[in-house]
Length: 220
Ligand SMILES: CC(C)(COP(=O)(O)OP(=O)(O)OC[C@H]1O[C@@H](n2cnc3c(N)ncnc32)[C@H](O)[C@@H]1OP(=O)(O)O)[C@@H](O)C(=O)NCCC(=O)NCCS
Image 1 (cartoon, rainbow, N blue to C red):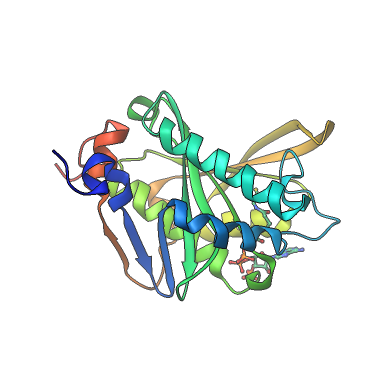
Image 2: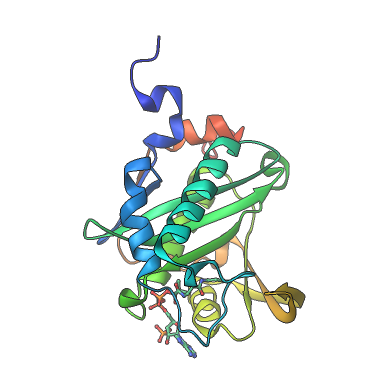
């Protein structure tokens, strides 16, 4: 009988560390601090970075929404379509989420990144560092061929992070946002273009994640 949680669900063993940041699969005990980080504010009222405005709701609604999504994503990891939201800690404190979603990953190997940070830490390079770390995880440990991202045209911070990580523009189209059409721009990153962090990205526990995602070790 497996005796520890990581043996039952290996992605819990994933640990990514770069400079002051750590990225890990969300655990239930992270939820209150994660909800607090979201509820403290993710964006200015004038900005609409998400397809629906989930982050402006009251604390209870934001917390429940995060919980339901994290549990659903956790259970669906390794299905034909999945999402991997990693909780980001800065000097030990939860500051947001850096994640990726994918369809038919073992064949297509093209995850699409998403992220948010609590507003009080914006503009300090954390968004760039956590995206670079996730790209290192996917290219070096999970065998990604390309990584994509997207942002509404009126979200320059997200586009700036993509540019600084090495993605190139890859078209765009109108998408629904709060029920209205909004221009959504796409970005794509090739492994050779990744601007790696200056600090070492220390990754452990990727083998268990590979098992669940159905991919082999890229070094073998
Ligand atoms: C996107 C996000 C994760 C970026 O995190 P961050 O830690 O603030 O990003 P960084 O500090 O690493 O870099 C931000 C870059 O955007 C640039 N930027 C920020 N606002 C900008 C603006 N209005 N116009 C142009 N560039 C802007 C900054 O200048 C910086 O680039 P620089 O270092 O070359 O100066 C964060 O802003 C966030 O959570 N936003 C709300 C949620 C969101 O938009 N998520 C993405 C959905 S697609």
